[in-house]
Amino acid sequence: MTDRRRFEQQVLPHIDAAFNLARWLTRNDHDAEDVVQDAMLRAYRHFEGLRGEARPWLLAIVRNACFSWMQRNRPAELATGPDAEAAEAATAPADGPEALLARELDRRMLNEAIAALPFREVLILRELEDLSYREIARIANVPIGTVMSRLARARRLLAESVRVIAVASRLQTEK
Amino acid sequence: MKPEEAARLLHAYVDRELDAAKSLELEAQLAADPALRERFERLRDLSAGIREKADYHAAPSSLAERLSAASIAPRRAPRWILPVAAAALVASLAAGIVLVRPGDEEALLREMVASHVRSTLGNRLIDVASSDQHTVKPWLSARLPFSPPVADFSQEGFELAGARLDYVGGHPVAVLVYKRRQHLIDAFIWPGSGPRDSAYSRDGFNVERSSAEGMRICLVSDLNRNELSDLARLLTARR
Image 1 (cartoon, one colour):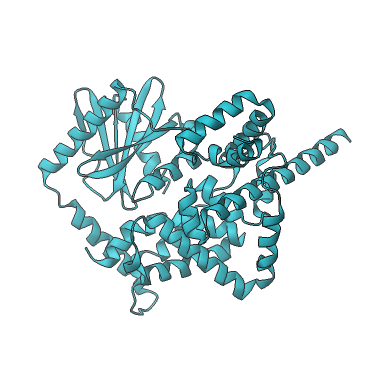
Image 2 (image 1 turned 30 degrees about the vertical axis):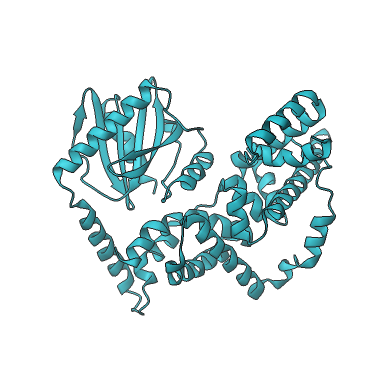
């Protein structure tokens, strides 16, 4: 089987997962298309390096393509350097309720809250792609412990903003 | 287990990443500690809420078309040639796979009917029970070397009940399970293409064959042929 055909069978079917991740990271359809196109070309070029499962492998390439694209086009948004890591470490992992109400929450508001999260990539890979901690660690190129703390933090922040939104909308209706 | 450790492990527990021993330990703790239990339930609801309501951004079909292997080809070609080359590539791929011997096809159909019967007799009908395509699709993608199209057609009267994995014709396949009235329909999906729409039935089961976008889709059910065709059309049209 030619490389091209193997690529078409093994990698291209994961284009939805690739686009979903890029769309959540760039928050924009048009940019996500550019990123995915770029990532697919890179993936094709490095196809021989594929060992094991194609989907996590492709998602790692998409993620890198996202970050280099952001660096070129929206460097301000990438202020997640040492500061963010420090903030992550400083947040107590155990405390703070993970509440709440996500099920009752308006779809649009939940999506906006997720889009605003730092480290939303771990949440997207875990909840929407159903990937294991180990796979996410490989994609994000961090230890599993970091995946766990980022996931916990993303969920806690999401729960907080969900609660704020819920309270705000309740106040709105009471008025 | 200390309370701090229990709280820390809640996420791993919700994500089914905890080993059996720790899970048991944590479950004992959950039973004994109502506050911890409440945190667990909130966390679980949050996770379910995200899975249910967060947008899954599928790639626009124009992007998939642009990225078909023809346009990834290293040599530069004039723009107009890409669609032509893509069509030729798809055609040659299809031709390559269509060349199965009739005997193979017959054996394949028998295997699928047998799988359907086995699954309805035993309890292994569904590995992942969900009517939510955003739960079913990643579940399947994580376990297969391809990503099958998944959609719920409740509005059209075919409710997605879940999915399972199976092994048919020498390769792993995705099986989407749909319900219509009291009938169950198995949709076997795998990469490839093949003969289509020739009527086939065996032992009271109808099989409806089609393919779309590089995927073969075979429906097996005791449902009547007309309604089975309706589902086949829905499945092939959405992509």
